[in-house]
Length: 119
Image (tube, rainbow, N blue to C red; front, top):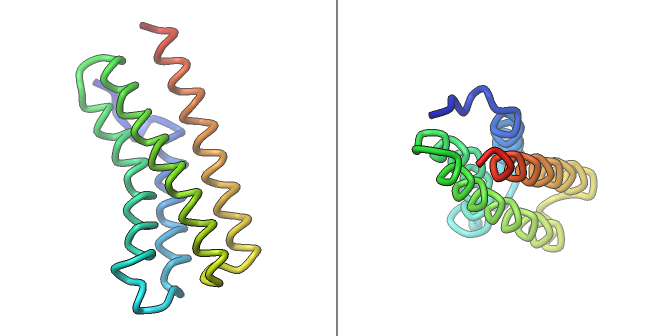
């Protein structure tokens, strides 16, 4: 069992989640249970799945949860694009958030490769 707080990928995903909550406060109120909620859930799912995987037995189970986190990160990328195209995210915020999610995906991929090499 690993402590998820020790993982750089978890820390980066957590910081992204905090940034997403801040960025989505400006979304229209009528999107609270729509796109705002979807973005927040997808984003929070990334560090949550890494944390859950760390609480499981063995690297194989952790790798499965890291793959789920990767799926949530890809979902988040699309939601950012949709929010941008709807005018909810301006260009600079969109660029910053997509850059951050791309970095998290890179880190998840690297972590997954390391887990598979160790098993």
